[in-house]
Image (cartoon, rainbow, N blue to C red; front, side, top):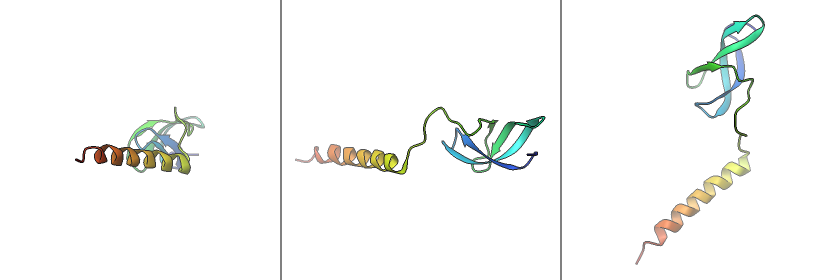
Length: 79
């Protein structure tokens, strides 16, 4: 690894594991990275986040529930 190389890391702004460029190193250890999607820089998190990423099914179910909730609320206001 060297400065400018691409590495995967969790971006707290994008909320996903994205491509990053290495910006700072201490010896052989990556210290700071720059997200190639949103251009935010942060310390290297070793591709770990505080929360688990959603699976496709969990994301679909979450969106479906929010749509069903929105339809239920708007439908109850009709006379």
